Length: 147
Image (cartoon, rainbow, N blue to C red; front, side, top):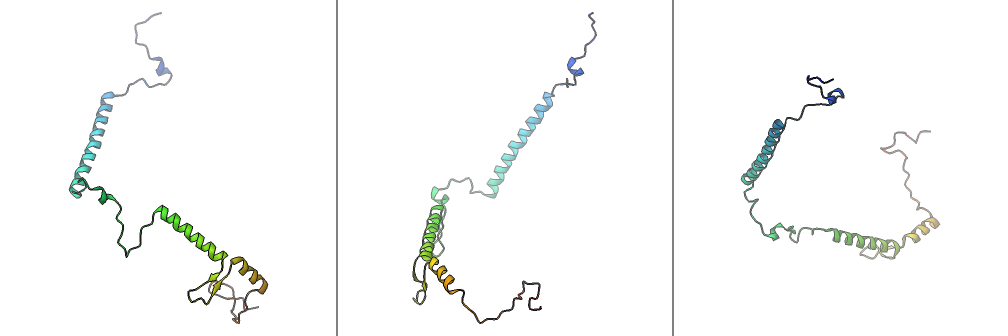
């Protein structure tokens, strides 16, 4: 049977929204958003011109390079020189630990390899001291002198 009454959309019965997006309102919102963004960029550029007038001037490339301080100041270190310095330091440390030589400029003390020093310490033991120091210090909370 056919009737001329308006029929309800079957999607409404299923719970779907039947209204469309208001394109006019969406278009106005997008327009004003882009006006705001472009205006913010223009205002930012103008304020940069006022606050830093020489910012937009072309500068020679040597002025953009890092300035190295004069001689009394310490030199700047790059990654390459840092790695080289660390390698040199490790080599000198290894030579000091594993070699023999004078320990000071006056040549009154010598150093020996660390393995030999540990062997001597095991043979001779720790040096004896005449100091009779109590076991109480500022860090201890108990007095160990009392029985």
